[in-house]
Length: 604
Image (cartoon, rainbow, N blue to C red; front, top):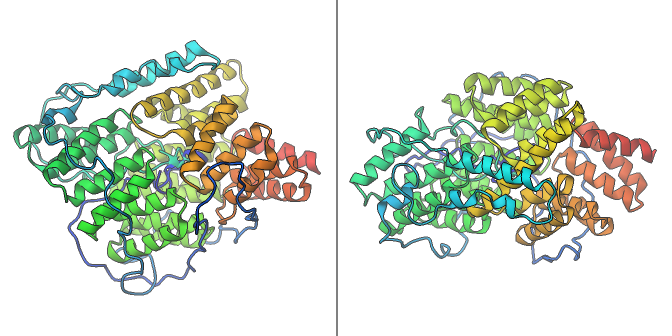
């Protein structure tokens, strides 16, 4: 998930979640706005190789201190800002050091497929998909999981998600009026994470800002298909179709679109191997599948062709963030801001600062981005990011104000609905939170919202709520099976959900696998908690400390650290961590917050 996406999985957000880029011709950097926030520290930048095995402990560092309350100036943050929208987010003039394009070549498979039928990428949209049929094969995937309770329930859940992924009806083809209007990246993440996670993708029911210029994604896809049947050698058209499929997968929680996106983008590159649009599309697709190493390689390849590609600049930041290379991500954000200031870059620049604990700068930049919003989609997206930032600081009033502004701009924008549900739950309105979350998962059954809804049912404890919660957790397994069937790495999603509500050993295997791929605050926290629930607290402690080491103000991370510290005999530190979590965001989780209070009371 790029910032706020996905891995949002993870803590209830999307890593901006990466998909908010608009195609535009190369242009020189715009004038700058003087910044008054200090640059964040280096965070978790790795200077050398680190052990892939979780038993080789990383250095223990203390990241529990607050770097300011983060509440200053929060009131009214979503009621308009007076910043000059034409300027960048960073102070100074000229392009920041550290030009993009330092990675190696494009991953294997980026080109070729010249002989593939033009119709192959269309899939179920009117032309048979002759090469994959992944969505059809995914039905029943969850039923093959062994040793999992509730087998029939999981099979039913897989069928629900399989039907959701295949629900594509034929439509009358329309004129190709918006061939180059679709643009997005694949990140984000997440669940959630969760900004996730975000590594996990966050639920989104509205198309990302700038994707259609006010149009409709499904209609544009049919228009593109019509055009490409008539003009099969249009490389740009294939690239745009591939990007549209990536966005469609994200907005509809339907990973079966990713193989179609890959075929369309390969077709584009077979026709124009140096197309920065197609290379940036491959970066977006790789990020959507949580393959951040290849996302970075493709973004760098695109930037070698077009250093001002907004989509590639944004994807490069997302990939570096999701690989845990925070110092490099900060440099990449400054470079992108110098070259292509605008909403996509501003939101990523803000997230990099938030990860370093610099909430003041993150808020300032997001307010500037809101002032530049030129469409309802932009407004909804940025106001939601501001709401998530306020929620993480425990400022539920400001969060609800921001979500209201987002939904006023676009009443179908699901990340805002998800954020409002979380803020309502934290603010004591459980009934309103459940209503919002039920509406959300009915349209976009992603892991983060499913787990949140299940925990809301458990916290309510009414007749039948335990069974309702189990159904949500079973559906997480179903989504994970569907995602994996379509090339998505879902280990972080598995680790987060299974540690609390599933197979704990599977959670640990998944967390170790994800840690072997990338070292981020989210993967460190997931591994720490998976070790804890498996009774391995001494192994968990260094990772829990690492998750909080950058200054990122995340109450769930502090709660996990506090519980692990108590379990390892560090009672003073454990009490401090638990108290810090509850002081920062007292309603951070429907179940976790109550457990944190109980643990703190027991440790007194």
